[in-house]
Amino acid sequence: MTLAPHGRVKIIARPAGEAPEWVRDAWIGLTLPLACAGVRETLGFGVVTGPRSRLGELWAGLRGRWSPVSGYVIEADLAVELLGFVRPDAAGWWRDNVGAVVASGRTFVFDTAACAVVA
Image 1: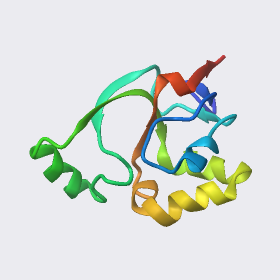
Image 2: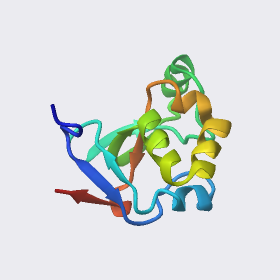
Image 3: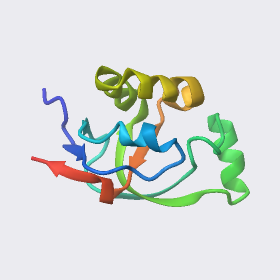
Image 4: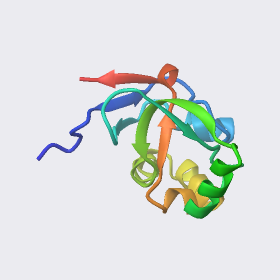
């Protein structure tokens, strides 16, 4: 069994997003397994200002509060776990400030400009 059947990306620049700059900078240099292959175009919410539950997502989506997002999809809980090995302070920020998102089986989308595909 392959640990990253959909491939991996290395974070090479500060990802876009709502987390503080120092937290987003902590991702740089980390290699993360993809939840699905390739770049995805989807609709999503900011991790800080978005809804905290699946029901909240549905309600906000019905009201047109989605935003278009393009990038590489990573499982949020796994990403934060891996971040914790190199930057426990940054992983702690994710758990303390958006723990519901991290623990819910949701995903992060890292913008393509911040990523390099790893062979």
